[in-house]
Image (cartoon, rainbow, N blue to C red):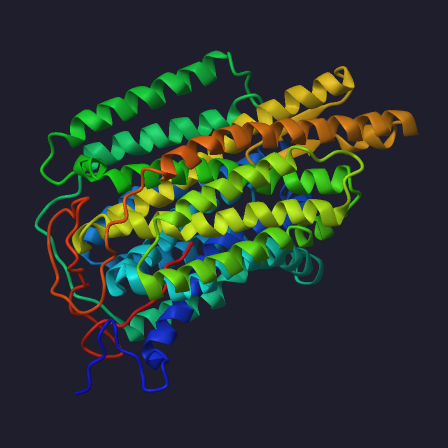
Length: 539
């Protein structure tokens, strides 16, 4: 029987057909997880009109986000212990059951509960894809596929609102959930039939006390950033209590992980300099990236007069530059194996782009803001895949799930804190600019203004409001730029450890910072054959 190894290609230079099938299936899974909230946002007004429960509307998003964040590290560890294929298929199944149930919901309470179930599956979809690819492909070869998965974000950002609006208008809001079922079923069948990985059955038990503490800590911190300044004042007993609970749970979690035989998050991972650095850089990247995604459309709609749909399309300069740079960086890493300059360049471009965006005013043209966004997107393109690649290159195959979930979680938590903290700066600046004359709310889904009251304002007051929003976005991007300087400084300390390649014997145990030139390849597995074939790394 012909075998296909991780580094082999067909005579034409293409990967085996089975690899391309699995690649397509994994991309569908990532698209589903990233697309969901984008589609639902457009359908929200119709959902509220039919089910009621306007006071609990934000929980439709919060339940999904919270379940995704809290479950991510657990999915990663389960894959490490019991095999990635079965765990990944389970997460797809849970996501599809949650989607179907959400579409059948008859009350807002039911919808919130089913969205939490859906988010639970989404956490496994994201980290499972990353870990599977990390196991099948040596880090040096993953770069050539980066642009494909970077394109998934662009499709989700641009296509989500358009698809959500079309489905809601022509088929009903329930199809915003039902659309996941056929797509997810295709991914489920394709992965089930074509992907073959080594079966793994560990005698170790999952660290349930550690899992409970980590979930408690993550949940408390996400709720703190979600509710702070909106549902509750930052100085309220609820927010202070969540902060104390979250910090206490995380401290106890660290103490527990130092003592258990099979920790949920092995603390020795952070002895690796690169792993620790990219975890912090990933947090900061999520902070500024999600903040940009929230406040750029607000500026475009309010100050530049774009429609809700067009504001999504106006993000194309940032998304396209991110895709192109990610693809070029990936191919360069594959060809040369060198990467140390890329996080420095990326963090520098992110900082520059944010400083440029902080200069936008009421007279800034759309092409000018597009150039600023392209600079920011280029910086993200340098960093997004590289942070995951370096995290995975810092560990051996049995800990790929933990490394992937940690990288994902750091970016997710960064995004949650970013939206909340930048939103607080935005609200304060706009409120000061208007003299307290407008009602402004910033939530986990973005900055939402009282449009009805603004329509009644005279022309002079409207101009004052536009100036206030421009000033608010200025402070948002200025704060983000100052924080990104930290990422730029940290990037200089990244060590260029040789990336594992595709023809050397496998290794076990932690990967040291001073790794030898001999790379490490995945365990024997089959993708359409008895041994693994390369796949890409998702965002």
